[in-house]
Structure formats: structure tokens, C-alpha cells
Length: 242
Image (cartoon, rainbow, N blue to C red; front, side):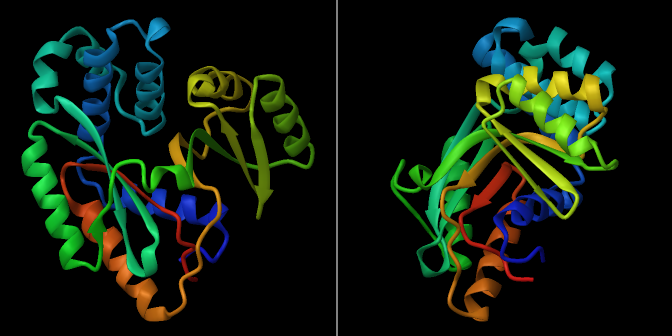
């Protein structure tokens, strides 16, 4: 895995999730459909839709598919009518956030509870875990030239970035959710396609578990959640072992 650095953990978790998802395009298109349902078809007035479209394009979802969802959003929305978040406790009380897209909240709630119970976790009260995280836009770029770090940082700051960190040749840029689309577009124009981007839940203080057994149990839990068809993303405040 990616080591104790939470900077690396986000990349590891995100990459592992995307690699495992055979239906990643369908999930991203469902995100667009739900955003249309909640805020309308015009990206200019719907920040959630702008972010969903940017995420889909970054994952190379064909533009024709995206346009079809925007034009025929009503029929596609039947696939998933609710965007939910569950909060849970994992091994040693670490915090887990589970983002779900579902057409049946009762079924999803039952199945998520069962997965947690079978893998050493348990459901937590709403808002009892999320306060441990910040919900932000997150953009990663490989630093490919000697002057790119400075120019990328200056451009990001001028466009409202909240935090910039560089580690092992990768620059992570954080911004407010509402600024994510505009910042992504600006950086893409100036520096090309990002290595990774999307909305993320970043823990304020990563938690280091006390034993290898706890880490093994946590990875088993996160993998089981990732494999559930309704689960969009899973975020954890535990540092992951290398």
C-alpha cells in the first residue's frame, strides 16, 4: 500500500477503487443523472453537475454518453434516485464514510449494515463521523519539469485553491467544492489533463491503528464496501500501512 502519508493514501484508495470497478462508466453517468435531477440540466447553474461532468470526462467517459444523459436525464434517473452517505466505525474506532447511489434506500441500508457487521465495522449516527473530515475538491498533477511546481502553484492560488502540497513528484491541490469545476478547467487549460481529480473527504488528523491485524481487518472492510454495486466511494481516516 501507499505508506502512512494520507497524501498517498488518497491516491492509493482512489486508484484501487477505480481499478476494481468494471462498471465505472455507468457509475459516473449515474452521478450525472442524479445531479441533473437535483439541480437541473444546465451546468452553469448546477455546481454538482459541473463536478460530475468533469469527473466523467477525466475518466474518459465518451462525450456522446454524457450528452445523452443530459438530454434524456429523466429516463436515466430511474437507475438511481438517491445519493446517500452512511457513516460508520471500523477497527479501533476509525471513521469510515460511505457514499451510495441507489434506487432503494431500504435495501442499500440493510446491505451496508450487513457488510459492516460481517467485516468488523458498525453503522454510526449521522454527522458523528463526517466532522472528522473536510469535503473538498481534489486535483493531482505529476510535476514533469523543474519550473512546473511553481507555475502550477501560482495558477492554483490565483484561482482560489485552499491548499497545495507536493510529495514524490505529485502536486495535490485542494479547493472548496463550489470552486472545483472552475479550478479544474483553468488548470487543464494551462497544464493539460490532471493525473486524478474529484470530490474527496480528507481527514483532519489521520489515525494510525495499533496492530497489523487491525489494518488487515480494515482493508477487508474497505474492499467489501468497494465491491458493493451501490457504493460510489469509501473514505477512511486511518493511515494505511505500506
